[in-house]
Structure formats: structure tokens, C-alpha cells
Image (cartoon, rainbow, N blue to C red; front, side, top):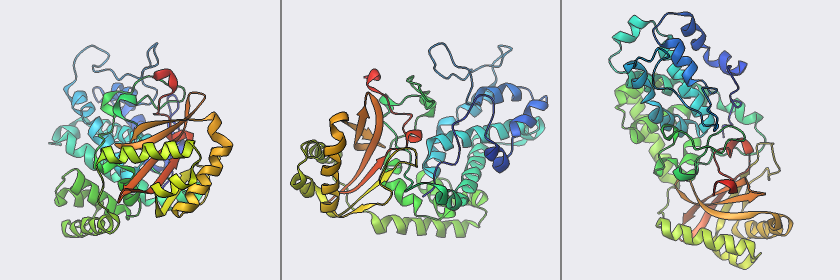
Length: 371
């Protein structure tokens, strides 16, 4: 599975790897007198203005105080673009970089060329999709460099979402939040990871965002008929692993029972809650200790968890929280989120457990100071 290939964005510059891969159109835009282009590039950078309270802000007007309808149109697309890029990449930090890149490319266009484009939204979606497709195609090499299994970046409930910068406890701009529906559950994102890049892009654009195959074809570089086949193949992959999902309230009950059994070190209770063929996968990314190979079998997982509880649970607090729109658990140590667990429930048993421990993927999760 694809690891995040982009480091945390730093003040005023992108990583050399990102510039080699996607270029640096904001530099070109800054050299050209394209109206508000330099202003916009400064606005969308990761180090865009931070107030005294640490909240990242993006001004809504150019520096001369005049309103900019074009800038407003571009900025209004941010949420939809980030929603698209996250579903395609499974990484919010990478999604934000992709959207920043797409917006910078828009303002790198000559002003006359921008005026000939009928739909700013359509242009930005197309460019965002193409950048994501390029990143997905390079994923195999990046997966090989990742330590252990790669899991998608888990998302908290909207009310708990904080800024992604290290040490930031401020709420993120609502325009950057992901819509938590069925297409962002951890189980769904895991299935998307099994698809080819073209399948994933065609399926997400058409089935999730309702883009016609004629427009999908322009992004994927295939004919509309070929894109139709790609989406059909993706649907077959989903149907092959899809199982009836119990109501969210029942899932919450099972996760609550799991937490209590784990804290009580009750191996038999855990075995009863887990599917006999359950799997558990941890993602530490080489940053923190995490099991490098998946655990398979309900009894094996239960015994491993009880053994782990004897070594670490005295210093860890588990809190039931929403993870990618479904009931999950958050482990906090000294008030800091150290693990986020997502669950897949089928036939009234827990079938999959995904434990994300890589701290780079937990920056959106609040600490006890926010409660």
C-alpha cells in the first residue's frame, strides 16, 4: 500500500522531490503579472498566515483590498478537491499538497488562457485527478520503501479535527474537512488500495463524484468505453469483499465490548467478539514500534492483545471515537494520541482491525487538552 511520499510542508518551500515530480509553477506564476497570481500562491502555501492563536488562515481578498471573484471561485473548490484527492490517495497531507499544486497551476496559466476556460471547477478537478493519478502510478516504489504495512490516514469526527501541523491544537478550516460518508470508511479505502491507479481514479470520479465517463476519460487518458470497463472492474473488486454492515449503533456496542474485554485482559471475551478469520494490521511507518506483519485468526489476535495489555495498558487510555465515519478507538498516552484503531464489522463480529501508529498520520487527532 502506498506510503505518504511527501514530508510535512515547511515555511516557504516544497520538498525537492515534489518539485522534481510536479514542477514548481508558483515560481513561474510569481514572475508573471497575472493579476492576483502571486497573491494567491502566497495564500495557498502551507505557511500561509498564522495568527497569534496558531490558526492557519487564507485571506479572502487581495492585498489591495479589492474583491477577487476568480480567487473566490478557486478557493470555493478547495473542499471538493481535497475530498477527491483524499479518496484517491488515502493521505490527507498528500491531498492538501495536490490541491495546492492544482491551484498554483491555475494561476501559472497566462491570464488570457484562464479567461477561455469555461469552468474553473472542471479544470481544477481535471488537474487534481491527473496529479493524483501520477502519484498513484509511482506508489509501488514508495510502498517498497515503507516500513511495514501502509494504512490510510485515519480521520476524526468533524468536531474533533485539528490542524495538521506538529504541535497545533487549533481547529482546521472547515473547507479542508473531508465529508465522512461510506466512501471514506477504512474498509472502503483498503479496497481502493487493491485497485490499479486507473481503476481507482475512474471509479472514484464516476461512482463517488458522479463525473461522466467522457470527462473521466480526459483525466485517465483512455476512451470513455475503457473508463466504463475500469469502473466496472473496480465495482467487482468491491463486491468480492463487501459484506452486510450492521447498524452503526451495533458497531459501537461491539467496539465498546472490545475495549472493555481488552482492558480486562479477558481473552475468551475477545475471542467471542472476533471473527475466527479476523485480521489485525498495524502501521508504525518505522517511526514507532509496531508489528510488521499482519495477525490472522481471532484467537491469535486475542492472545496477542492480552499479552500487549499486560505490557502497556497501564499507561494508555482508550477512548471510543468516530474513525472515518465509523465507531473506533483512540489510544492516548500522557494526553497525546498514539494509536487510532479502525474496525470492520460483519455478521456481528469484528472482522478487521487496523491500528495506525505512525505519528505523521495522527496530527489531526486532538489531545486531552481539547476535551
